Amino acid sequence: MSQQDISIEFFPPKTPEGVEKLRITRAQLAELHPKYFSVTFGAGGSTQKGTLDTVLEIRREGHEAAPHLSCLGSSRDSLRAILAEYKAHGIKRLVALRGDLPSGYGAVDFSSGEFRYANELIEFIRAETGDWFHIEAAAYPETHPQAKSPQDDLQNFARKVRAGANAAITQYFYNADAYFRFVEEARKIDVAVPIVAGIMPITNYSQLMRFSDMCGAEIPRWIRLKLAAFGDDTESIRAFGLDVVTQLCERLLAGGAPGLHFYTLNHAAATAAICRRLNLAG
Ligand code: FAD
Image (cartoon, rainbow, N blue to C red):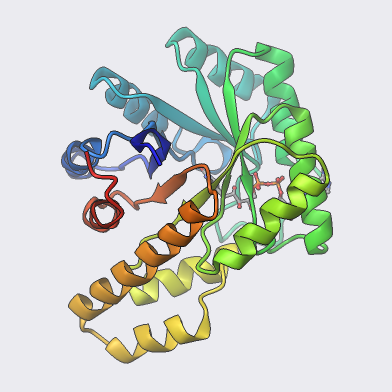
């Protein structure tokens, strides 16, 4: 695998300290020579400025950067304006998502609003900007938590590709078989785009459990029990997490995954350690 096949995700920091800390994180991770850095986008455009500022700073440092763009809670006009701004800055790559409303919004009616699903956003981006953007969509080897069924979710993934997504990044998972099966099933319904594996390094047990509950990623029982047994022993959690996630990445790459996308949560150490073990460090 070439080093070109790594991508690295950040969220836009909210404070000047966070901005400074991300600069340091980025400098460490730039040594891995990722293909691009991506920057998340909060529901309804809540991080719009932070996302753009972070993307522009990354580009000024000489790296490729892809803003995420989510559509739930956003209007056509506001998304049109964002796309025009990205285009004016020469940004050529986007990660296009439906998004999630933050907790506290109560029950969400997904049938109202200008956009309901990511395939509608991708269609809109193509209608507005033609082939200007390289578009990545999300994929769910373990099935999106709101999907009616795995088969339905796979068909909905195919809709995003038919709408114009060039490639996909998966939700994170710790079960390589789920990924391989998902890719195989996508190929059977003629979805030919690269499906990059999303990787969440393991560094913190309670945070991982919280995220995984929300996004529907399964933590296998043996991993969960081991992590729980380490209690507050963060050294052991990190060492175990490094072994488990490195082995997962090795299996994915050996099995043909076209790339790895790291969810860093703005921390460098775990991602850098995994890539060093995989001999991907520059
Ligand atoms: P969709 O593809 O729209 O799918 C959502 C659900 O609706 C699924 O259950 C699907 O089966 C179903 N569905 C899809 N299309 C249809 C249709 N046409 N008819 C009926 N049902 C349909 N969230 C953010 O807010 N900001 C981010 O920056 C962000 N970055 C992410 C990056 C990656 C790589 C990933 C994997 C996720 C990211 N998320 C982000 C989270 C994402 O927004 C959530 O997982 C969200 O719940 C679904 O987004 P989606 O684009 O996959 O939605």
